[in-house]
Image (cartoon, rainbow, N blue to C red; front, side):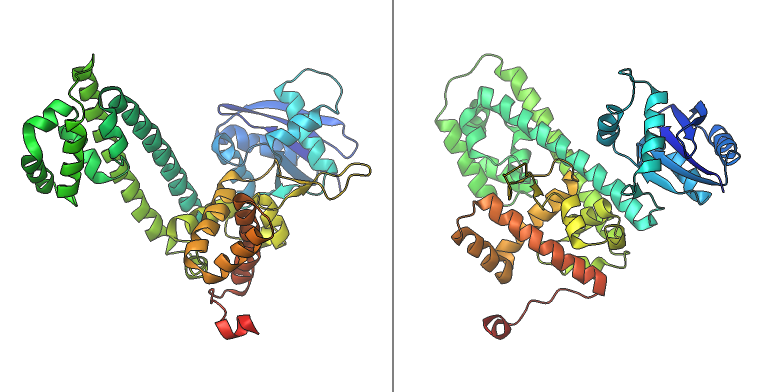
Length: 396
């Protein structure tokens, strides 16, 4: 039986494929368009070269999504190599040049000699939808953060006292800035009329917000250059932040509705600190199949909460933060551990013990996150929900 290894250097419009045999001899090298007919023809030509083909690719989604779907639909084994791994491996091959053909050949050869590569699989429809929705939510939150920062910068340029007094992540202050942005405008309307204006727009605690704004206005009587134009920009940015808040709220509802359809919804959300959003991001980052990782240690390493050894010669026990891990999953583990310290007695007790041992806050939270990986792993493995141990059992 002739074994063939095919490497694909994926791109947005075109891919380059190189196929090699057991000795590393190049059998095929072709540039194909990222279209289904061309990809199907490439598949047929590679399959005609041997009885068993193993594919390697340097992208797991995006421009490579069509090629991966076609290969998986035809029951072809597909291995994933990261761009970092390909870049480092290419240094061990002859020549300093970098071309798509060389990268595809490196991918094929690495798929031939390595046994630790991650195999791509067809994802569940629910998990794929959650990945799309959570990715969109991250983009919206990032856009909102940038817009809030711009809003703060513009408001600070004409009315620094109000910028310090308002929390621009809340709806009430944003509603205020859509109508009044300068000290003179706030003084003209007065506290009572401003309070009525805010109440008509369903702002909570309108009296306190109006009083805070008028106090800031009474402390500034100087009109700054460009105040009129900047006030218009503040008005526009405040409306943009409000619109982004509404979009985030809408997509949160979509995420929750889709997440509830997953079989592990109750198990994941039973874990202290893992709510709907963080639980959905956990599924999107891991795929929901713990068998892919094999052990909780590998899941912790993939999530960036397990330190990597950095030993050399007589130096041992030197640990450092890993360089290769999933940033989104690490944020899920770290943030959920922070939330659990507030709401879970067991997590708070573990955190306090680490702090008493001399750990810094970040180190203690990471240690807690690492411990929680074992717990969520066991819950998903057994298909049961989290239940805190009774105090008597803890004391015993």
